[in-house]
Image 1: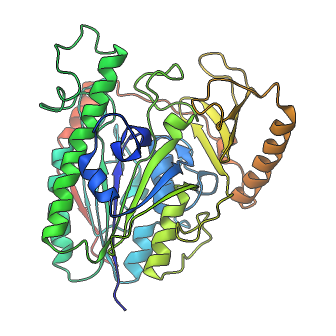
Image 2 (image 1 turned 90 degrees about the horizontal axis):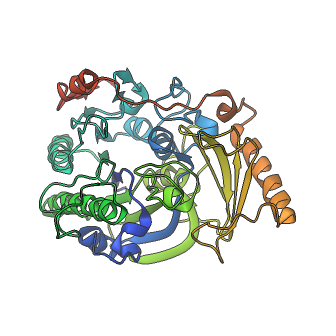
Length: 425
């Protein structure tokens, strides 16, 4: 039986609606567009938990944040050893595994589960820190990824690879010439001027797109596309002042929770799907294609065995504490604590996404029957996802943490190129 290789290309903070293959007005993603033309494109994919740590943990386990317990970014919780990650499971089935990522070490603390199961875990250097201005560069991520893949190929076994790009995370400062592709005049005095900020965000996307193009060219040169399933996705999007936030990913609105999801099969089959899918479905798909049974119950459904009426339960617990349910037409958001901007605990927001896709008009105190219906459905789904365990969203405090000292950031740069090797199975 021929085994596929698997590569997950994760692009941090990438809004689906800013990719040209998702209909964006600017040509931000010619290389990803080229891949999408021979892939299965899911137009309505959503994060179950935001921001970064909850999202990637969900992708790499197939377990909802309510089940795996990582509900905040850079919190105090660690992923339980009882919840296996994709790379751990595939490794037991004879795969070699590698990652280019920096999530295990953030601001001086260790989030060790991100290294679990990888034969090679390569830290590309840098951090997405507006306070320190130190970016993880897409050039470096591609360079390190090619090196790791070459080493994995030398083992002559099927491989699993997780590649984590950080552009277009803030600060939006793409290198030349990408800073001038969508803004050809002199920069304004205030870089937060919205038109300029969006042009630089889009420039970051074009930059990472070119570097992904280089990576895909390498895969093609090595004839790997004929035997590899390639996923392109993101952990979350970005709020570009639509809901009062800037350079941030706060809020369970679609501009933050909707992500791209492109799956290229070796056959190059092209399809476009409109049904709702979610982060938990990625691991389920890999297990099905690898013909491996997950060792624990996961919450995802293979993207090739889709349930077209399956609602998405999503949550956040970093800059604020909230939970939501999204169906094809409706979204209900409930705030579980008073927010920093004064939204009271228990406040509800209901949006008719068919008539109000930008989520501007709150119908919660007008469509009370629909609120009750969605609230009952949400409560039922939460109960199932918790597996009779305590609710981590209610028990863990929101965590907002920033770099306080440049030395903290500098210590990460000194670890540039750090490689962890775990050879013993």
